[in-house]
Image 1 (cartoon, rainbow over the protein chains, first blue to last red):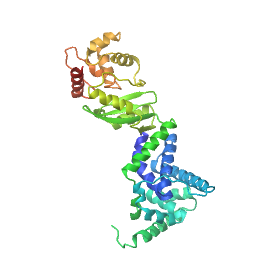
Image 2: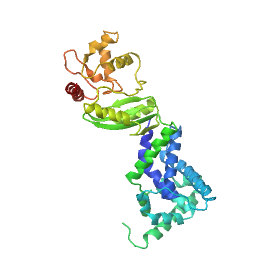
Image 3: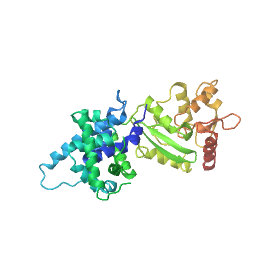
Image 4: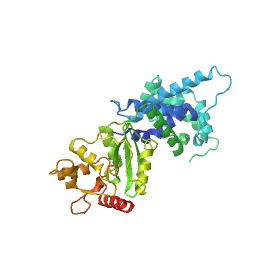
Length: 158
Length: 200
């Protein structure tokens, strides 16, 4: 039986990348924490054959919750609430976050779940709705848009 | 699948992951979700693994035993909701460090003895009464637990002591004065015995 710590150590970075791409640097940390807390509560589950896919699916639901909470909290308040400070390594890539935020939601999430979370297009489609082909297209379009925005100006990539 | 170039910038650094792990430890503890918490402590006999349940210290393991294998076994036997948590084990860590510095003669820790039962539990209970710096032979321990013929079973019980160092099975030696076998290897046993001789 795998100790839960092994799952956190192995997949923690992946889940944070997924949450960062889906939500941005600050909300990503709430989503990460809630994902692993929910996973811990459910562990061990009977049918986890693919731990990564299991975690990405939980992260997707937690991300929806975090986004809803933000939207609700933002409505009645006239002044901007104090946001917790994001860590320096998350702030170091503001251009990338701006580029992700500029993507249509479907592209942003397919990029997060497929390219960063390793979820097959078929499972991404099951999570987000729509067909497998549409998920594949959205992921490809999303990556193309990110590359165009982030890599073209300097012209060179390593 | 390959990660597209700009997205590799989302890789978290170690400080961020540590901070998130701390938060997970706190939340998991507050929600009462953890079966076990663990930490490791560097000592003169190598890195010791300390594992605790809600009831108390459950397991101490030497490097020789393979910490990963020990944790996997405990996950199956006790429960798989296991997290590293230096904070949960801070008191045990401090006492182990004091012991190896020669500044502590007995451990004041709640123990979870669920891993031992029957005769082995009798032996473990007796071991806790062997004082710092003194030793008993396997035969003496057998006699003290009311089964003088069970000398080999005492040896087996010591060899399966789930809490070495804290429950001092190293204080049980051969009748001829040589130290005898030990979970952490003979060198570790000699080191503990000479530590206690010089600090006693």
